[in-house]
Image 1 (tube, rainbow, N blue to C red):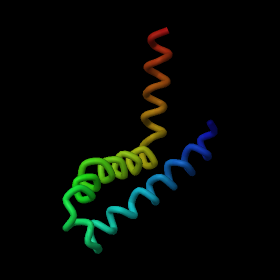
Image 2 (image 1 turned 135 degrees about the horizontal axis):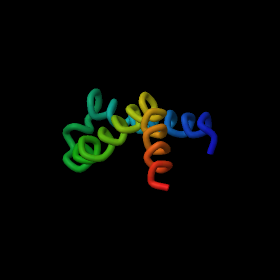
Image 3 (image 1 turned 90 degrees about the vertical axis):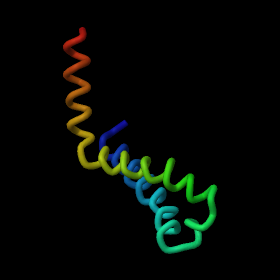
Image 4 (image 1 turned 90 degrees about the horizontal axis):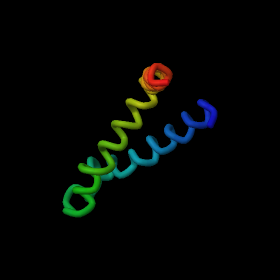
Length: 72
């Protein structure tokens, strides 16, 4: 997969997964126990990780490639 395609996919995931967080903050989602739990435990960490990957993913890939080459 090309880097640009990967960024587009992760960026759209990041944007679309942030919508329930907005519902949690501004809507009635916080009052409902199951959706609130899903937002806090599943969606928020996924959005945070995707944001870090968009920000620092190239360093992680570089580190992984160097580690993989050192093993061979």
